[in-house]
Length: 275
Image (cartoon, rainbow, N blue to C red):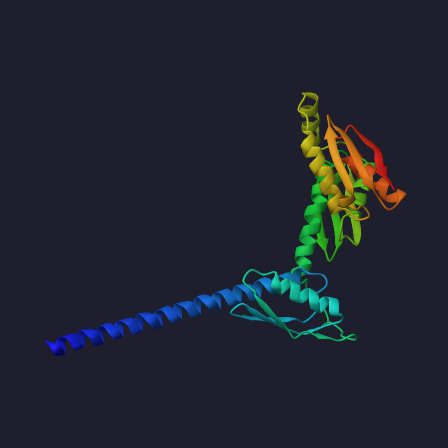
């Protein structure tokens, strides 16, 4: 009887030990996955940042502590790297070993685009396409937009030379664009898509004021030379009212022109837009 009880105790102890070992292994594997996820999230944000992507930075994470190594040119970039790491969920501490070296030369860029550059180009392409669709003068164009290293190429058709020029201006005034190769061919007539839209407008299918307000604001946010955060936009029956204080007359004129170009806008009230 005593021997049997002893065997039961021994068996139970072994079972508990195995269970504990399994739990520890499971916890370790789970922590490894978390570490890897956090490292990837930090590195991806570095790759997307135009201030950090060129630097050869390395990240390792262990149990909520991120260790950063590499070189940057300025203290502000070192601090930015730290703040990005601290912003990742689960990171409680950062050992910032990044060295600030004033004469640091980032590694030579390869001929192929990096992850950050590819995302930048895709973002530019989407912004240019959106602005062309929202504009009353370019909506319905058959336009292909391609971006490489900030250089935009427009291919397709336009119904007039003026519309082609406007499309190029909208693209060039998009945030992140360095140049535009405007290859749009002037066909002298509107596309089927534009004819359908015009027919719908004549039939009384209107565009909502909220849609117009959103697109004007979005156009500002995508555009250079206009600080959209300084401009309040409201729309009533297609009439857009702009208010705010801008830095120059040129910025004010551009803000008004961009609003006028948005599809559905009947007129722009800009007396409240001052400099």
